Structures are given as C-alpha cells and as structure tokens.
Image (cartoon, rainbow, N blue to C red; front, side, top):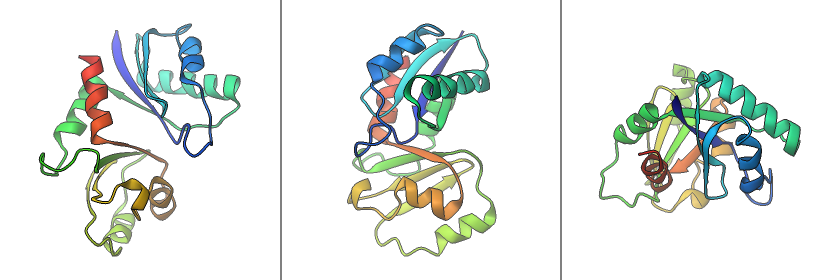
Length: 175
C-alpha cells in the first residue's frame, strides 16, 4: 500500500473553490484508507493500492461530482515529498514560512525559464528543479510578484504551492 500526499490547487482561497475538508474526507474514505486532511487549503494524506495517476483521476472526478469544481490535483508519494524538501536550496535559517515550494504540472521549457530570468524580483529569489519551483519571498506570498496565478500565466503551467512549514508538517504526518 502506498502513502500519497494530495495537494489541491487553490482551494478555499479568498472565498473561492470552497471545499469543506470534512466533507471531502468523508467521500475519500469510501475509496481510500487512513484519510487525513491538514488545514483547509487542500492538503490530504491517504493510503491506496492504486497507482498515482489512478488516484489523481479518481479524486478529480469526486471533486467534480460532489463539489462541482474543476480543481487540479497534485499527488506525491512519501519519497517524492521527502526529496522535494531535501532539495530546498535556501538556507535552513531562513523563515520557513517565507520559503515556498510550487509544484508544476510539467517540467519548464528553456523558453519559460528565460521568462523567469527576465523578471525584476528585487530581493525575492527562486530556484528551478524539473517540475518544482522553490521561492524565497521575504515579504511573504501575499506581497510577491511570484503568486501562483502569475506563475501559471507567465509560464503556461498549472501549479500549486505550499510554504515550507506546511510541507514539513505533511511529511511529519506520514512518518
């Protein structure tokens, strides 16, 4: 049985894409084992014998069926989450609520990497590894040019992000 970390894109943000996690958990428990949710922003841990793509497809379908929302679903296994956290390029002394990890639906082409390089980001920093962007945002995500909608539009991707605190908490929950 595989442990999966499910990250939903832009759920319960600014009064949009409202999904009550307790209700979603109840639906997921009909199909998966040991379902847990963490905070209201679409973080789920579950266990399944199914392959990752099958779990992703089923959760997407359940959200459409019960909540009438078309939400991007990102799924990591425990090893992937651990590696993403381990690969954080920023100093561990930086405030982890100012370090953000954004998952992309595909690896960036060189053309889009150049678009990022052209931006004047001031004291914000980023690092790209395949389909993961790491950001250091000293003024927080709310005051950043590198919001998820901006990243999606500029880089032509679907993305979801969490701060490093949340990623660490999710990893702790699966151990």
